[in-house]
Length: 350
Image (cartoon, rainbow, N blue to C red; front, side):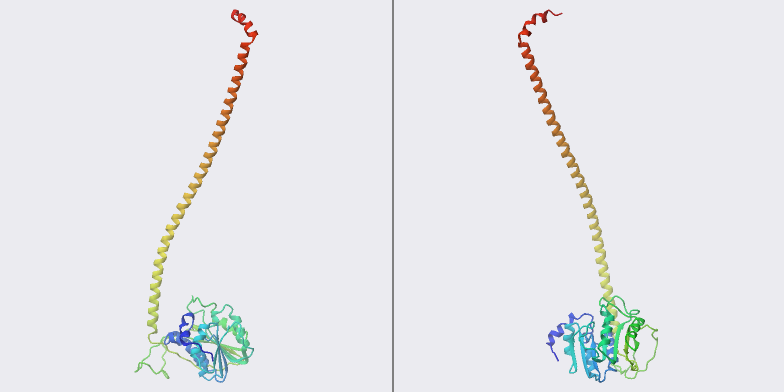
């Protein structure tokens, strides 16, 4: 079995998003949800070759190993998760890098295939079902889970497609001879006991409210050629202070939303100022464009005036030249002998 330095593996926890890590989440409701699923699967694994498709931190693969599986192969796409898994498992469990949409194993490789809280994370869940069916022996058993989209809290950014009960039933019945979808409910309990850790091996169960039909948060499913009987109810209890933790979490979210609201209002105020500045800039640019147009018109007018002045100067020069010519002609006439000979006649003319 491959091993990695414990310190390196544990320091990789932050790089494992949307995963149940037992050491960090022990005693929380999420731990009860995950452990209950694997306890249910443990009822069917004795002597079987098991594939844990999406093994995460390896706690489930080890639980199936301890329940009597002949062998367990855990696969995951996250190297950080596999580093944690290799610390959690013992002999009998192999942890491999693998993709549920393209399994590297041959057809009919496993007697039991377990795939919990994986299928909702992939873009093509139908392809995952095809792959899980392919590696399962004809007489094997598939155990699967998915959040129930009709009841699960919406908005998980890691989830691509959550099934409803009818959708999951249809998807399994199209691939297997038999399929059954059962409920995993999340409930609150009130426990009276004489010890701080109540013995719950044989509790008296009193129902103050029963779940509504199809009101389960998670859907569990089994599919195969012939289905085994249901092993009966499995209960995993979280910390008694779990509601208090959620109240603290909700209060933290409320404070975060309030802070974000203030930031948004501040941003909206700055955005209004920015819009006003942009409008002023647009007006100034229009005025500048108008000034540029007027400047061009003024330059054209100056050119026309300069042209007129040049034409007037040329005309005056031509007129002066013509006047000089006339003066020279007159002086020539006056200097002529005929003009002088007729001077007496001009004086005698009445």
